[in-house]
Length: 392
Ligand code: SDX
Image (cartoon, rainbow, N blue to C red):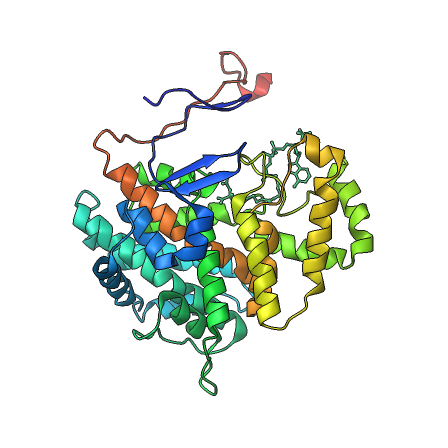
């Protein structure tokens, strides 16, 4: 049985697990992937390198990286039948609803050929999921716009391929801007894994029953969609746009502090970080860089910075230790790249698939692993006898 972990004052959990992938110190704002600080990985690494690191435990050498990228690239196509699943959705379906459906549907194509007790087949399933998520995500975007699906190409980088599948149209080839490709890759790195967050815990719990990895990742996508979790990036940009100008910030700060108002500052606060989310620091810098390099001036970024400044100097936020999290600035960049807000959480899921499959592999490969079975504190009635309806 897992020991009782005291996670933070007043919050203890028996649902914790042992994992060597990601370390978070919420008080100090530290995030490490296999020991490497997130800011170093974001600045110096690539999403494919980080995927290899999370899956295998070490940064790859040149040959290992080339072989890994080739393996992933050669799994980016999806079975042609998958495209028919999209046609069953309304055109205005939320892309996360589509992703829940089509990723779960992958089980019907690969379930029979995935023996999760065979490490080799587990890795093949992991490669398939990492490789196909960009294709499925781009198809979700294309379906919502009425544009034709664009097939992956093997001569492009993982992230370049995704951008082209998303934004290319038959009438006009999408030219991959290195500034955008680099920013997108950085955003994927920042979302790759984050210890035992709600969606990763969902994937682990689903996987602990022996369910196939495609169904487990579909469960993770469903959990991530919630506005308290991955859905916050879409909600944060919508909130910043609704605020619109810096003079309206105090009204929203007041609402966020009002216990009778369910409104919360989206992109602010965290279950673990009681200090600055190190990913938010990189994200804000990337937002500045991308807008400057693209010659864009999005007033939403000014609103975001001023809101952060006011909140971080407000006694309520200081006392509650509320800081911007990974979702606060990401929408500014994604919007500048050209994504609609409905696609933001899909991009989060695309990147987090790396963490989900790495955590799933880590769990399944542990011979001591058993089915997850959280317990409860019972608060219902004590035992009593049945009374027939005519006597009630
Ligand atoms: C992600 O777990 C992970 O690692 C998740 C994630 C990942 O990479 O997987 O990091 C990704 O999900 C980031 C979080 C994205 N969600 C949002 O930005 C939504 C807005 N934030 C909140 O809903 C909230 O901060 C949560 C859900 C993230 C955390 O909620 P908690 O557990 O209630 O936070 P807390 O215990 O730290 O709250 C302390 C107090 C509470 O008030 P009291 O009960 O003490 O009176 O601060 C309040 C909260 O009500 N509070 C907020 C607030 N967040 C917390 N008040 C106003 N605005 C906010 N954003």
